[in-house]
Length: 242
Image 1 (cartoon, helix red, strand yellow):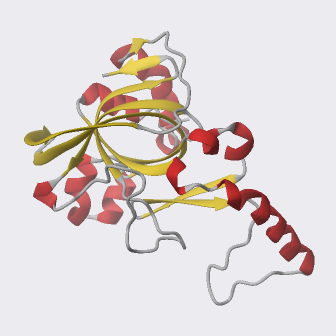
Image 2 (cartoon, rainbow, N blue to C red):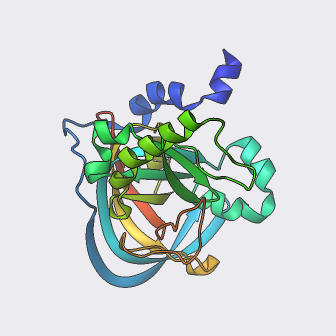
């Protein structure tokens, strides 16, 4: 039992944290067609979390209700050991990443076509049942496997819309929000509110629109600019963390 709690800590947290750190919400969440954006006068403020202090530049007020495809926890003991001191400051600021989809991509019959993954703070969406050429040695074991892969690709690929998913780096504004983040699981529909911020003290810049793209390839895809979201409010599973 102890080992299961260690390996899957989100499940007991989903039972306990709402009672300690949240308020009940009667709001029924509906997945957004897009996020809501309100650009604000850029303002820098100091933000402290644990033993670190950061300078954050507020750029855009933002909210969205979306479906989680993948959660990558960076603040686990094993991850901290693996990544070492060089990444500890950003892990403290952004303890996890959320790859989320919305609009048509979040519809159950479309969402089930996807396979979600994550690689070095960037989200990746692939099609289930499709064999991707991962290396020079990748090959189909049979003609039927190739046909099945091409069939699944033809069904799924038209539904991957770059304007309907993004990778989020949520900065918990307080400990209640942090607790809420640590109750989330893939498949949850969650509402996030806050401000998209740069982190000038670390030379990091947020995306402020989904149309902004990186100039490099991750997992065979050109990822959108991750949204660094100073998160002030979370609604999930009938509870508000703020």
